[in-house]
Amino acid sequence: MTPASGSDEPVRSSWFNRFLNGVEWLGNALPHPVTLFALLSVFIVLLSGVLAWLGVAVDDPRPEGAPGRAADGVITVVSLVNAEGLRRIVENLVANFAGFVPLGTVLVAMLGVGVAERSGLLSAAIRAMVLGAPPKLVTAVIVFAAVLSNTASEMGYVVMIPLAAAIFHALGRHPLAGLAAAFAGVSGGYSANLLLGTVDPLLAGITEAAAQIIEPGYFVHPAVNWYFMITSTFLVTAIGTWVTTAIVEPRLGKYDPSQAAEDLDEGDRLAPLTATERRALRWAGVAALAVAALVALMVIPEWGALREPGAESTIAAITPFLRGIVALVFVFFLVPGFVYGRLTGVMNNDRDVIDAMAASMSKLGLYIVLVFFAAQFVAFFGWTQLGQITAVVGAQFLQDINLTGPAVFLLFIPMCMFVNLSLGSASAQWAVTAPIFVPMLMLTGYSPEVIQAAYRIGDSTTNIITPMMSYFGLILAFASRYVRNLGIGTLIATMLPYSIALAIGWIAWFYIYVFGLGLPVGPGAPTYYPS
Image (cartoon, rainbow, N blue to C red; front, side, top):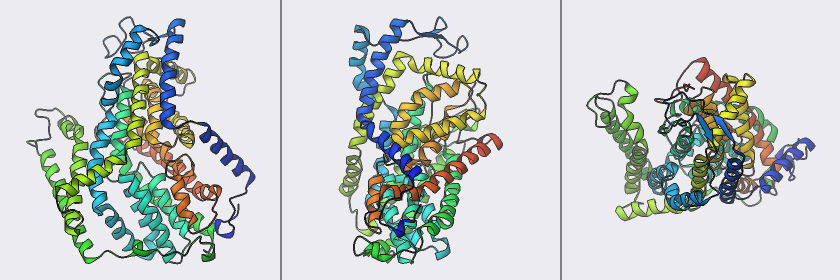
């Protein structure tokens, strides 16, 4: 395997090329995620008709009186290929879309994040963190900042990754190493963060819908993986830093500027913050602390407005806070974002704030289209009871082969990693797999919250080596500025050590954290489900 800096050609290793060709062929063979969900919806409708005609049914494993248990103790397939099924589809098409939990939560969170991004606050915070770091800590700070930047994922890809390459180039280090370190943080550590991001309510909504196949009314709040993801932030930072300095930089060697595709002028990207920007950043920090203090005042005291009066436990007492956390994320980004924008002159009135919100919504067009079809698939899957039947059969299989202990996640996480190679969208992948695996693993005794945490490891670790990831082409374009005619194999080969190290380290930490230390993955998140 030859270093990228020594050749303009992609990596030529035969086994690696075969692997890449297989991944690329599989990914290209799949339709667009929107088309995929439309086809899956039609497939579920037709399958329900066939299985109902065959009389497919399983015994309901839930005890009598349990929520959602079949009246006669038997779960049967409900056909949608009849007049009643057609009426149900037509009457609920809009309701399925409007009631899809991730839709509203993501839209609300993005309103606040959009203001912080448009004002320049997020970009300035990243620049201040990275450019002010001591040279010996630059790599660690870049990875850490990249992980934090995925709070607003687009900003991480568009700002953080090219910035990291430019910083390494300015320091006389190989720019592809900087790019790789940031890419590993933004995308390989996509689920890790100190703050809640837009992905948290999105995944929680899908998990909740899947969990309700087994227990109607089951609630999954956006912060259910927060504790585990806070610790994972430092884990990803440590792994990303070590891989960059110990593997990637030695492999790339010394950078040859003659390989650049153009005259590189890093321009304003490496410019330190101006006095105005520093002042605005300080006051934005004060505003963020003020919002956090106000929320704490409404949650911590027994008389707090966001507490449930008379609750018997702490978790039950803060249920209103957990249920409304998306609204608080909106305010947490909105207020500091406006303060920063106001002091830098970017935002002067309410119209500027509204324009920032509108701009953030305009970027979600494809997501909204995707959600429409994903919502139909999830609804159809639930109506037909195929999710419950699949869960019961799968859980029984796991019990028959005596694989109901923690070792079951050694199969589940790699399965998520493999699926992610061909279906790069986190929401699309989880919307397909959650209705099957959440109920199945619930019936083997694990909570939806822990199952979601395990899924996020699998989804994140292979983001950086799949061409199906939506920003992969953009990253390739950034890299090609420094090494012209850079091949996709070279980029994936550069990122593969991160993927392997993150997978091993993160899975090990999952087992230590959840089963070794017995810690909850988030507030109010149990480890086990009473199957």
